[in-house]
Length: 131
Image (cartoon, rainbow, N blue to C red; front, side, top):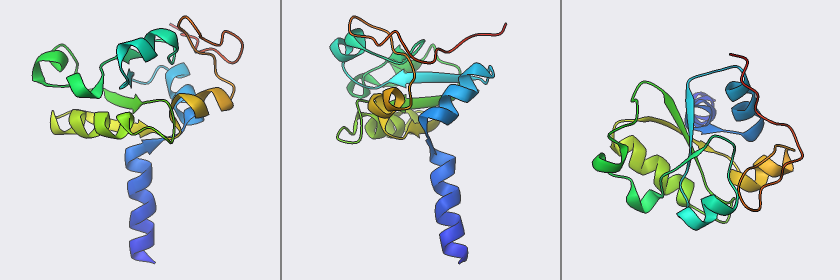
């Protein structure tokens, strides 16, 4: 049973689902969302306020402006894409605190959250800053 408990604790330590991310962002938690896909995908549709750093371009130079004290949540298109996993691995190797978004952009939309971009889904729950 101890191994199983550790397994689930590890999953929660390294993964986040869309509803937890949405709630954390609305509560003003120090989280920066990273779209780990290529720029053309980000331009078409992304999670509001996410920044785009394709996993292939993550290195000390492209991340030097980022704060290592906040949590980064990486995502990609969905379960058929591993850019978020590669991005989470890269960011962790660079010394950042990272979680991976379960289900990526697809599950974000399935949960009813709005997106931005040229093909963004404007209807749905929106992240609102209370500051």
